[in-house]
Length: 110
Image (cartoon, rainbow, N blue to C red; front, side, top):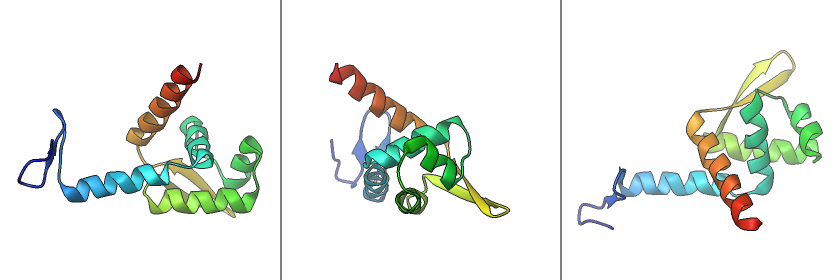
């Protein structure tokens, strides 16, 4: 329900238009299957690009491109460790969004 103040009431969370826009950007950043797979990999531990390439079986340039999108959206953070950059999830909220979406798709795909 949208109220006159420009906020949306969901029963638990109240969000203004800016928060809704930011949530939409976050969901768009998570919309690609490769990016979902990256998030699932980073749930286990920090990883560098070549580890993600090995786990996901896609090219290094593609992983790097998707990591740029996730980093710009505030989903992942990269920290240099020597010649490599270790990527990790920014917070647990994101892991819940992805794991819940995958669980929902699995339940309804059977």
